[in-house]
Length: 344
Image (cartoon, rainbow, N blue to C red; front, top):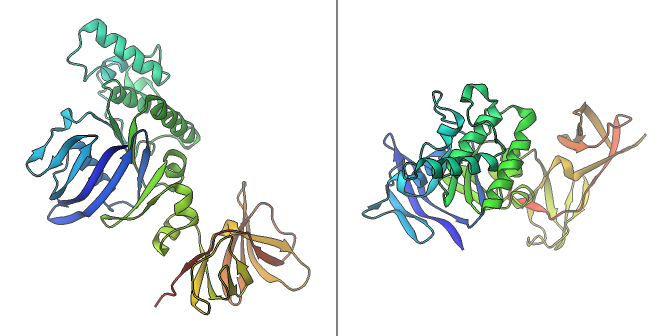
């Protein structure tokens, strides 16, 4: 069942098209990340869903409720959507409890206090209700913003770069905490980021944006391992391209030798294509003679970056331990082959 449906939405900003005929769905209790570079339209879509950006055309539905469409525009405060901002947007002159309860105007004081206490407990901030935002860490301030959004019991949560101001050492911990919290509360969410690491850790599905449209939607692993085009492949991580000739239903011939996939690739025998290889898909073994020349090695803690030459081309690999010498035998780990048409 879909929590949110965005259908053929277009938006204009400062006289130019920012979104063009864009469609997206979010299932109940699903977290979808809008991933892309700055200025590609991610935040514009988030604002349109929140009711802060008018549509040029298209419709937006939350469950069975039409939020935007011909002659329909539900105001932001009536959409049952919570929004969490990059800068937290807390009131500095209000306490934590007052910030969380700010939107509970329809409740009496005891009921409001009970709801605030429940929300603070959900985000592990019990006992901090009397503090002010400046007395909290960045991670704690973000938890206050989350509690403020949750206290109104939204049907959908929107998160705009919510982790960019959090220290690196606590960011992943906070990401996992918020993901667990949203799942426990049964709330669907749309999360905007330009960081693929955050997206991989937080989202159930990614929608990769480029210049106002979506290039590919799918599970993070699917987009990483089976990108539909070069833009998706290169945005999500390092890539190598090798000229490849199709020799049968599973294999291609390259400068590294015959490379076979774990399933049929669907290409015709004899086609001249380019094989995409992630650095992690290359396996290197030191040899005294033969093999390929190693040009660079860089130890990066959790892996070692190695650059070697292959038929005059620089190829990058990622391996667990540094090589002992300057020559290496190279093999390709089993995987489903990704083949692209040659560049013109």
